[in-house]
Length: 392
Image (cartoon, rainbow, N blue to C red; front, top):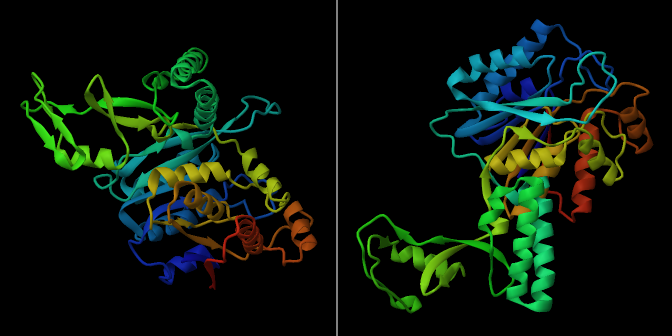
């Protein structure tokens, strides 16, 4: 069950409302302490800001599973201080890295145009942290390329058959290698009987040559000169999944282009304006000042979570994390849950979020803005209410 805790996040942590060692991913998007005139509080003495954040980091650390991971958004203003703080709290050896998140281009700076933010990444224990990878189709810019290639090849396959589809595929791959520098595409030069694009990997291994008989799938393989065949169970698994492919009488494993994976990159192209666009698309323009991009949160969830994991957002703001969880669950057929924590902080009078709240009939607090968004998301996605609100 998804849970939304309304109240001070430190108090929620101190009262033990969240079970220890139950959380796989924590996302923290604290006030950046930039002294800006946002609709919520964003101005503290630096020592006070660090002290308040340290209390929350220390207490939330105990909630992480042994393979848990923490993502903390910040900008240049407090990055260096936050990095030192996290090194103390999580131990420097558990520092995973820093994402640099590209932001919208600006032209109003006297010196440097700052077009990036950061996400600091730490884990509970690096010995237990798994590989951080993601399907290429789940990276927005890669998804566009993959979808275009599949569409172009599919049209040719349906009209003219496999031979012409392979020619079209080669043409598309060459184009993207030259103009987009996407050399990983060079492996995907095959089209199967259903018009799906794949590359084939050998099913032998550096073991002594062997004969392989698998009557269950009607397969007999003679020994190779210098290598052995992989296990019987591997062949049966591939056969049952429709991933066994033969070329010149030799078996290979099929890997479809939509399943291609890669290690995560430290540079992320998720513009901050996307968060505002996300709200606008749902008719919620003006709900919140600085909403995070839904695609950004989906990316973080995908690289760190599997089914039945829990994502905790300690500064839930407008509820981007909840929307990201719902969309990941739908798109990746997962069952991730979210826990959100947000205070009843009153929105600054006459700000856009304040006026939006009044216009839409709810008390102008950040927590109410969050609840309003989640209600709209569930309605738009035809989801039953699957969360409980816990007021602290």
